[in-house]
Length: 411
Image 1 (cartoon, rainbow, N blue to C red):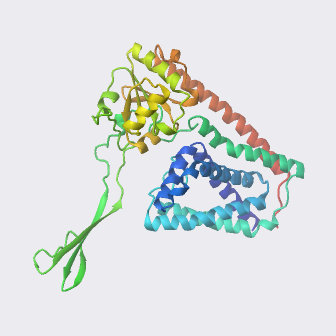
Image 2: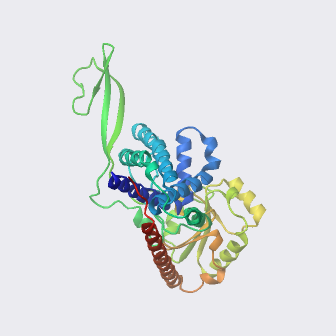
Image 3: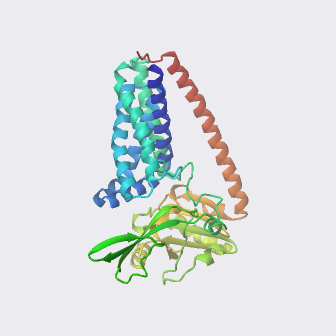
């Protein structure tokens, strides 16, 4: 039984760490998914809490996983894992049957699962959580009380780090379709021979007060006594979906300008703000400087928003924003960048740079060969991530070694 309990413990640890981390690096993305849930269940009044809930849920998942991995407060971790699974398993069963939200978002944008796949996955992990909960009293303390308190505090800090970093800057690991290197026109194309959606069509006809179902192959077209009632179409197999399903930009007058932006012969800056009234206004002065610099260099520049013409005029009057504005769908803008506002740099439709409003460089940075500058910046960022990864692995090995020395005994 000891081996089964340990297997359940580490299985749940991997699940909770992975799930909490990939959602935690993108807290805004998970908050938007929570908004989908609240709308689907007609509890829109919870939407102002979405971001706070995103922080708490992502950190809680990661925290529980870390407790399970390092053997700290295992009884508490067993209860945490059980409560998570006993809540989300029935929820995903409901989603699988009624499909009010097509993607549960349990792994953020990193891994997409259907609602039925999510439910089957949760059945397995619920069983593991039940086993762990049943045997929780067999866990004994592995560390001294002082060491355990120190580890507990450290793991809490680690659990909140990914959502905090994702909130104050862009996601450290970008799983979105607009990440750097993506050519937007290419990402919208459907390859030749790609599988298409398959639908099942059911037709309803009525005769002598009886309504009967027919398909496209057995329609009673020769019997005029059957009267058509209704048609229902159900998708039974999903075909290929382009990474970017649509990308549309319009002038404030309603004219389509998408091709003008994507085929612009030089660099094009897009300030993305899905709602101007919710955006950070302290950055406007820097954006004005960048706009005039871009204009002098012959670069394109526009702020794209879902706000109305009236809201845009009010924003300009309040902040003195000098740059032009475009309109686009709010959901598309939230997907493009996780900042309000965020800055995207395009080169002939290819994303070569993205910045959170906290980290937008000075206007001087954007002169010269921007492609070369961005390649160097991405390379430097990659090296920094590698360094952090190596240090994290060494710390992980150290904690695992400490855990092995004070291994819990399960009878």
